[in-house]
Length: 83
Ligand SMILES: [Zn+2]
Image 1: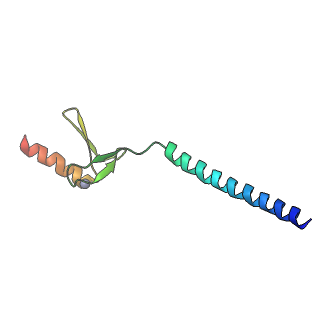
Image 2: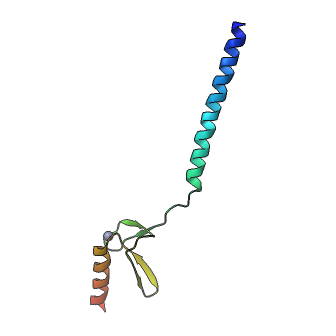
Image 3: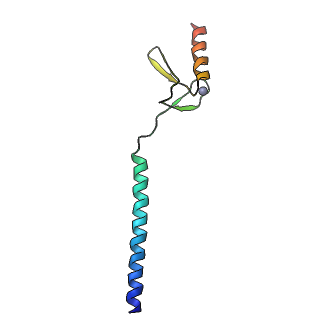
């Protein structure tokens, strides 16, 4: 009778561990399925910024992305000087 009780407890424990591990794995997969945010280099301060930044400039059919208004303005000014 005691052995039967131990076996039942052991089975419950195994089920619990497997359930926990599968939950962990599925959580990991969900993270991988998320579309990664595309990063682009800020040409002024050379940091990486997300593509959905509001600070972007279109110049000669190229899009440039910036971390801040300051970097964007610097870029615009430097391009004005060069012609
Ligand atoms: Zn910047």
